[in-house]
Image 1 (cartoon, each protein chain N blue to C red):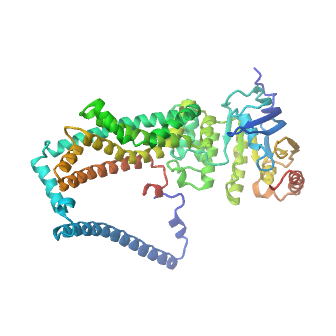
Image 2 (image 1 turned 120 degrees about the vertical axis):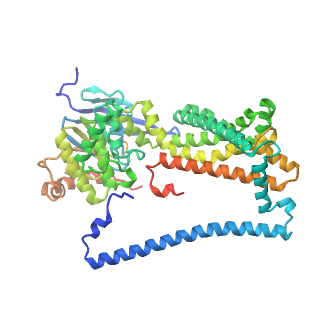
Image 3 (image 1 turned 90 degrees about the vertical axis):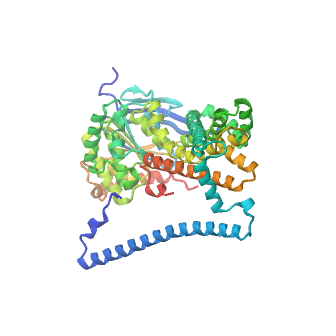
Length: 294
Length: 263
């Protein structure tokens, strides 16, 4: 960490014995911090193993009915079977690829449209006054219901799922972009104007960067929403995809299949979140470190 | 061309300024307010909190239009933001997503300089304000005094003929403030610009300025104008202990006391 004041510089003026004891204290503290971190990681895995083992045990001893609640070994076997022999709808990777495609297209269209509309409305008070009430209403409607409309109108193909994912994503990103633009510091805007920035430069160089942390925060949440949109869309009517896999498993009373599909989706969402976090860290490297760890 | 050097740098001529707040209420910030700042003069404006000191600066920059009266900068009426003006804000107005060098080069870039030249100018100014070696730091890695130096470099790199300062040092601790006042006087002496320095700290006003304008409480008008005849160059803590300084401080405080209301 490059701090403005190097404390070790000042230490050099201290007598040797004082400096030594400081260094000793530092070493002890760092050792303790490392130990604490290792302990935390140990407990993370320990808890996971405890839960899985408890579930397996409870299902095997019939404390809970494995027919309804499945058990980890059956779920693992189901994923392996799908992987090795393919699902009833074709290979597993194809289901994943289709769902991921719908999610990503919906995420990008909804995200970009949300950012653009949020910035436009955020920069224009009058438009904001007119549209804010509609945005609030649209936000409070359970938008998943629109999935049925999209399946009717756009059919069983990819379009209806993308449309639902777009609708799910758009309002989240829009709301955050709008808020982020409105919160841009007015002294910073005045400063840029006096330094010579044109209206466009104020938007691109001051308003958008300052709204960026809001927008990026919303992208984390909205990737999850895009995934929900795609899966629910498939659930409501599709020929391929993880959502259909879940619907088929449900129809066959195959609890292991539902859990297995859920875990596959979970891994996908986790990886996407990881990638978004890396991108966010790059774009917001100017922020103090304590916010990046969150 | 009206821009000959005989006209004052800044003239406010019987200006009044009315605000309409967001909930539709009107308040009068300035009433029948006149002041002039000669070229190269350092003018301080003191007044009670919330009286409308900052409004005078917004009028000069053109961020705000007067309700009645006229504002002229370098002999010309103010119409929009004048590129000859530089402004230092009370709060941090530097951009936290840009590092130090990109903050300082922002002005030249906005004004159409080539990137390489803008960085060169910015680097030179960073050295002048004692921040050489901190080019790549972000604002959260700097102390309050260092951030203020970035603001000064960011403003001075545009070589403003008119420098407006809105309580620039009020958020700093006592020691840092004294050092910054010294550095400001040096930068000003080298630049020859005309300064309007708004502050609530009357000792700061006397120590820095050629002319101190004392305002009444809201709606603000000029209560009294003092010409500060302390010799330059002034060295910062020392000047405060001179007899004449104390005389000025006493009589300005007497003027101000009548205007300060606790409510």
